[in-house]
Length: 65
Image (cartoon, rainbow, N blue to C red; front, side, top):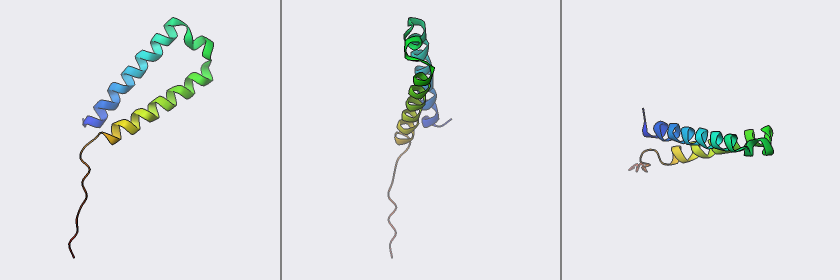
């Protein structure tokens, strides 16, 4: 498993714990299902962007003529 996948898996577990805590407190009932789904999609998108940006080395390839 690549480090980016492991990072994203950890992020999803963290996000799941956060959603469970907000549900247990009762915050999600006041916010509504639509806004909760939108927030989760945005959070997962941010997690994908961060995990991809922090994965591996980015190198420039120099081509000599």
